[in-house]
Structure formats: C-alpha cells, structure tokens
Length: 212
Image (cartoon, rainbow, N blue to C red):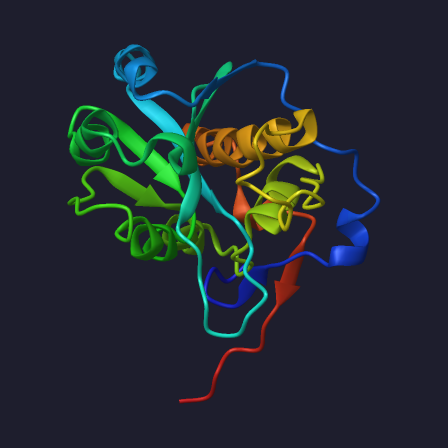
C-alpha cells in the first residue's frame, strides 16, 4: 500500500458498539496542599505518565473557567489534583517543568493556555498525541477516536460537562478523569512498541493521490 495515499479514521456510530473502557487502578484525590509533595514524589519515580485536565463548563459564550483538576496517571495509579480546592502549588509547578518525567497528553496547547490562569510555568518534556498519531496516518484527533482505532474500546464522555468544582467528586467523575490521563499513556506506549501497523488497520480510508 502506498503510504502516502491512505489515512485512518473511525465513525462515531461504530465506536458506540465497542465495550466501555474502565480503569481498574487506584485513584487518589488530592485536595490539600500538604498532600501534593508525596504524590509528586511517587510520580517522579516513573519515566512516563499520562496527563490531562478538567475545567468546570461555562455555558456563556466566550467565557472559560480556570482549570479545576489536573489528572496524572501511571499504568495502575491515578492522581487527581483539585486545583479549585488548593490552587496551583509549587510542587505541581515544578512537576510541570521537570525534565526527568515524560508527560503525555492530548491537545496540550489548550490545557496550557487555561492552566496559565492558575500560575506561570514553563512546560517541559511533554508529548502531544495529536502530533504523534499523524506519523501513523491517524487523522482523527480526539482521544476517544484514537483510543477506539487502536484498542476497539469506547471511552465514555458522559462526565465531561459535569461540575468539576463540586464539593466532592462523584465516583463516575473520578473514573472518567483517570481514564483520560491513563489512556494517553497507554496510547503512547502502544505506538512506541511497534505493535501497531497502520497498513493493517481495519479503519483505513483510501485517498486518491493528488495530481501534480
């Protein structure tokens, strides 16, 4: 197959038929500044982690709230840092800027833009999956679609527009937030493993070569 003449994409209707993705790891919610250091110490013991954020939805046009939650996940443990409760602590800022841990996310430019409202930082050693998947001919850019293409699983988005600044996060919110960060990590490791062959994907969409 001509590598320049195909792309990989998936239809939402097909995704709806896939089994729902679950997170079976441990989830730790951090709400107090004094608990951040221990969590960051644990995360810095890993070479690669998944990263995401959640923001309380604002239904007024042109208005965006501050980031409510930062999620960071290893393969079997997720940490949910509630910024609305404790702010953007020095330990979190240092983690965002550290070089020794690779942090994998998606649409990071948007995350960073909103996070800068909480405090100044210089993001270092981040990988954006939206850029990475292009090398594998994946044209879809949403986490849900990328995950579905690679693993035939459906990431539920039912909690996305819930109140991330509620006094207590629901179990469904905690699982949803954890999955988003964990899925980024799983996608990254799978692509790097070499197990995914784009030319053998069942979701190939053939393109006609452009005429010079």
